[in-house]
Length: 177
Image (cartoon, rainbow, N blue to C red; front, side):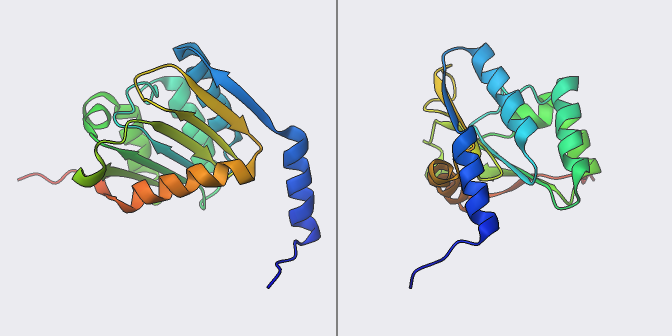
């Protein structure tokens, strides 16, 4: 059965094609700039996978403000973070933990299961349209792609597979004895 596009969907695809960009990342500064750009473009969902998220600046005032703006824009917005080891978040990212407490309905932080702990790339996906990918999380080289829903779908599928192989790990509340 052939699927027909609505006029709105066709217009969105045409607009995305006109705005499409792809740039290589060669340095940590390139990655930081791309992360700011992609996060700023997010309107509904922001999905992040990185083994440690050490390079994401989650404890900087600028990143906190950017994520705060994103999460305040709509109660439906979602921030999903998957990591191999949440220690960087729990020990070194009190600003991200504050956002988790403030927006507990919208922020989820998962730890990957042992079966996929060998994955070493990094992904940031905004609204199924834009993404950043680094083949290895510790290296600067990578790519940022904007306004390309078809190309982004491949990486969205990869993120979803990682998410399915992860479990909630950092919560908004602390339980103590």
